[in-house]
Image 1 (cartoon, helix red, strand yellow):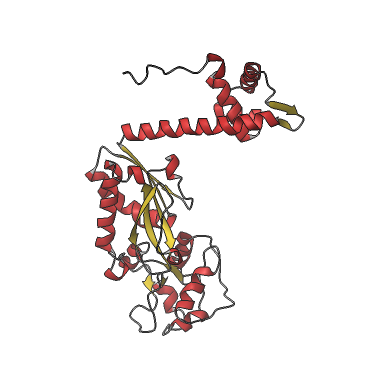
Image 2 (cartoon, rainbow, N blue to C red):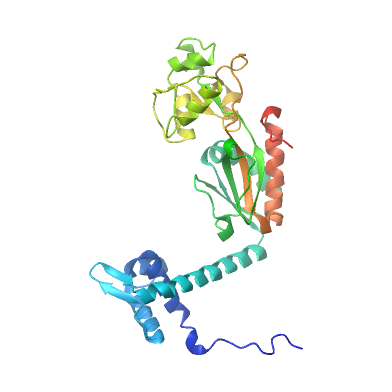
Length: 323
């Protein structure tokens, strides 16, 4: 028996023109007709006409025109609550279909310091091995919405305090590396200041900070040093503090992956390397995230295997993830 024998299409009157629904959805999400028109690349008069079409179709006022702009009526809010979810489902299903049928591209989001100072310098090796794969790398502090296919892969830092770590439902993850944070400075800076013999000595130096003082406090606390009052320039993110360290402005905290080229060239040196009072501090680790149902798709599988091999090749044994 044909399982579709009793299937019926929805009544024609129950499904308005899709362009009218898109216009209504855009106005509801963006809070105005002109904003919706700009997002849809339509004239605002066209969007207004679509709204009137939808209101005529349903026989219900969905938008109230006020001096401040267009706002949803109570009926409009109820309707958009359902229609908006349906449009999201259509978009998600379409993106997923495109991804499954076009596995020749890979969108990777990554923490800025790792992306700029390590991954970009190694990515050519992967691209040469997979010339048919179109790769897009985005350096960002934002976490990708993998379930909505905002990216295929996301590489994030996960704090040690969240271990054992469990990713969100529908997402799979694996630890890539657990590098320590290490103090670094230029040879010129170190030659111009008092010699560093112990972690306590660093309190007398110019410490370079990111957005706040927290990373230095974590490192100092691991060395049993309480630092209630810290000073020094705050430079927002890690690659800014590294840039300042290269210019001899002070001592920055980073990790061996991010600073590998600078250490190899002698532009920066690890402060306290080899001294017995300096210990390894591991406040977080890099993790590789992807959708669970796409974890073993060819592009993601190849990239994950390459990335894992490359990190393991370059990281000292103490910095590799367990297992």
